[in-house]
Image 1 (tube, chains in turn yellow, purple):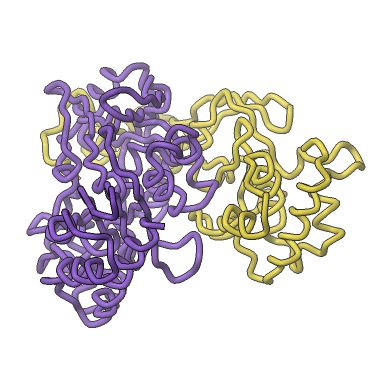
Image 2 (cartoon, chains in turn orange, purple):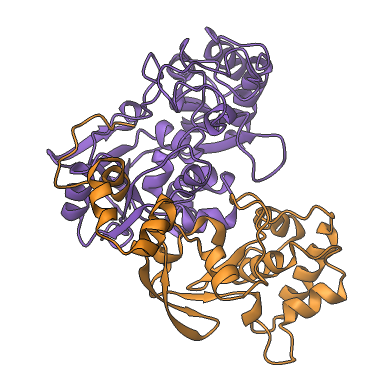
Length: 205
Length: 324
């Protein structure tokens, strides 16, 4: 990266700033409890660097405060207790963490929560209407579209999007457009069957 | 991930100013590569400048060709009816890359800016000249099955991972940028760099310079194909890929554009093979001659010698498929 220009003294990052001696003066001016926290740079950053986040999840608005580094996945699971969305690889390679943001499927592990400010998120918890499961959930059960079930929330979220995008016209089409969701149990044939049935059923998704 | 400061740029000028006044900052849009690199500790910007609010989301076709705003998601380009009809090579290349979820997140500008997937670049316990200048190249004597056969140096044998960029190279795209020194138009061939002795530099953008759009000139190619050869049928990086754009009339090739992915530090244009094909009939013999010429000068390493044979076969197959 081209990062060799001089940094202006008036425009420093928190990390550069703390690396310099002036950080000690900052810490000295703080209450003892905070100084203790300040021994760990990351704890200090957490104290200072919460940013406001307004987000709608499964139809419910939230006014939250997050660290910039919090991913949408970690926000859902760790802060909001919505543990239906799974953390598989945490690097965008497995699709376990698939959710819909403003109606489009994404990998929530690679999306910073703060970058979803003002957006509408749907997770696996937002699909059922009370005890009435979503047609895709019903189809996965009927066709045994899983074994261990860990990838299933991501598979179902991806499958719904796959049909809505118009990419579920043939089995080959489904396999290609579902390739971002890995199933280590190998339930793929049954997943394809479930998606085909929902597509052919034509129910509103 | 090491924490960082976050700011959302209200305007293109503000974004450029914020980026150029603070060296340890980075632009972020889709974030599909940058967030991953930050999680792995390969990159550690102190401030992220979110550019997703900027008005760089238009896609339009005119007499000068197709113009795609830097923030248009890869999926929106790939699924656009006009792109599919008039620039099918671009749509094919985009759909060959990543997964449906990632294509919804990743932007056109970010696709150009993504970094190599060389495993040694990602492994912070291993030397890598691209990650830490002067630390050495682990791939040179390591497991270099995925690595370059063209344009590499003693410092780096990594390849550029993009599919879209291979199509853009074949289509002579132009990258529009804005920066502290004004606006620029960069020919696609001049955008990415070969590693030389500065493999830490992937491209020729100045600090603070922002991609605003990619333009694909209007063309008369009537035979196009993007062939990607990989370890599994979908959702894997290319071992080799070939973009073909031909203008053919009466079974004679009037003009040809060929580019390869997975073989160099940047999308690799096959200009000698293009010239060989012009004026020739679209026959298997001519395709084979072009493929032979295209792979001349390839330099292989311990584990990637297969790319020469695979590359030739892929060129012939892509040309054949393009002709339908």
